[in-house]
Length: 442
Image: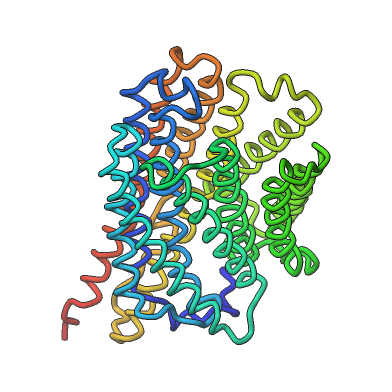
């Protein structure tokens, strides 16, 4: 039984708003798979290669950011009781601008064309400026913020920092200004994006969706109260100390200390999450849980690789190790997003059908439940395709020519199955909605 007691479901936006983001995300995952399939070993030749940068942004902006923007536009009114201003107009514009901006950015990396980069900066800058503005207003208006709202606020601030650093790097690429240390700023951009924007939002949303969908106990109060703010402080200290290290002459170990603390914080969060999942009331192992377990395993492996790099710096700087870290982090984030989609999309469809049925007073139509909207067997099939893609990607940084195309094929298959599954829910939703609106036989 889903626990929806603390949700303001009547304030939910039209289902078309989040669904357009969720259905678009697999298309960019498919584009990333095609890039791997066509580019082969060149994609994994270097983390700074043009295909690698294009692939990374197709997955981070096209898949992760697309899903997370849709989720925040949906969840804010429901979880916080604070509607996003002009959500239909603003959500539609953000979605359209992302559809234009992400392919333009990938094209800019692949061609080196400054016009493509300028178009991407214009579209993505407008998309995220509008998104930060309307979501920021909604978050500001919350009168009694929950711990999930606190996580959203920290994630939105991290997104703003990520965008500023990304804009600074992109300006350097088109010759608008010089970037003093591109490697340093690229590392800051990546970590603020994955550990800040993605990670902090994942933690904040988990406080709500894990007890609700997996019927687990609540996260400990101390974690809900302090984790998101503490994570943001660690990232901020890492940024400030990293920029000041060369100018002030700080000890070599000091700038990395906040990142170590943040890594320990994430490890603690994953341990607590596993304990809560072990105590869930519903003992069936569903596809969403499989994605959660895989995401945690990949994230912990990335943390161990990071820790090993601290003790064995020569191994950490070896060819392939930084790319492997990126594969693990991206694989983990995409796994969590997959797991959430398989709960959120069927739930939203069921909820909106139920709401419409009550409004029409048409009780003659039997509504499909979440399992009927998306049977586990189809979601399980996509999970195993995704798992195979992850296993193919792990050796790719060290043997790019051998497995890159196989990895690309499996990535394409995984995202095609994800798109098919989400479309299956949408088609079933539309068919049931049409039956609800059909004249009731007298």
